[in-house]
Image 1 (cartoon, rainbow, N blue to C red):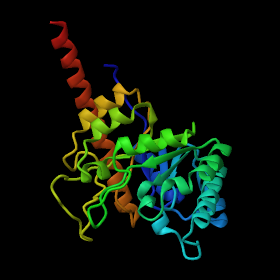
Image 2 (spheres, rainbow, N blue to C red):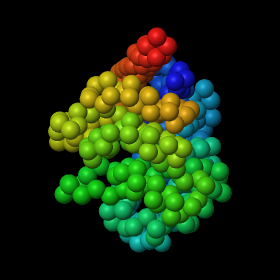
Image 3 (cartoon, one colour):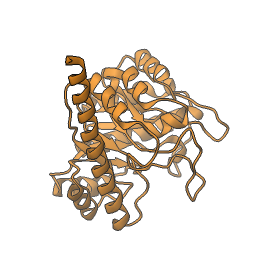
Length: 284
């Protein structure tokens, strides 16, 4: 199997400042993913200036605000959500961001087919990929768009060339899935990653009672070398992007960023050694 050393990205958790981008670059990351910002014109202008001032950290993607997180004043109707998402996509596109992720948890309150067409079209106008993120069980244990089959089914139904998948490994394990198997099933449709670690199937919660822990790779039970095998098998060129816990201060961001980068590179080196050993064994 071909050796890979993926470029890496990490989320900002809303802390899109020059200081945050400097910390991310200092840790070794070349890409940044902007998550859960409610995009409006003043914020977009500010964000564009910040990204332009730090060209060595490339914007990889943006997490569009979920329907359940929509700000006050956005009508809870198909038209209101479509208009709001379209605005968010346009503002992200104006920042030069190539990917936008939609949390498929939207389906808890409205079916995707009700807002798909106009949303994909707006993304296509900006030459952006629109990626569907797999969900985890909600409070009642119900899942929606949690499996590759469901996501691939919607991609096929829509038929848009710019529609892809985003794999959240934490959501995957909490829904009882195997991240490496998800990668292999999504195949060429995997366009974005929200990689994070947790302790599923054990239920370990944080101080807020949440099991979706967003830990750096290696601080949990996910088999990351197996995930790397799968990424190489489907020829995923990256970058690999991490979605970690919220960073309320620069020290926490620095700790998470350095830990995630160092752990992934160590796991990557271990995976390379495993691949080399497998090749030697096959040649004997």
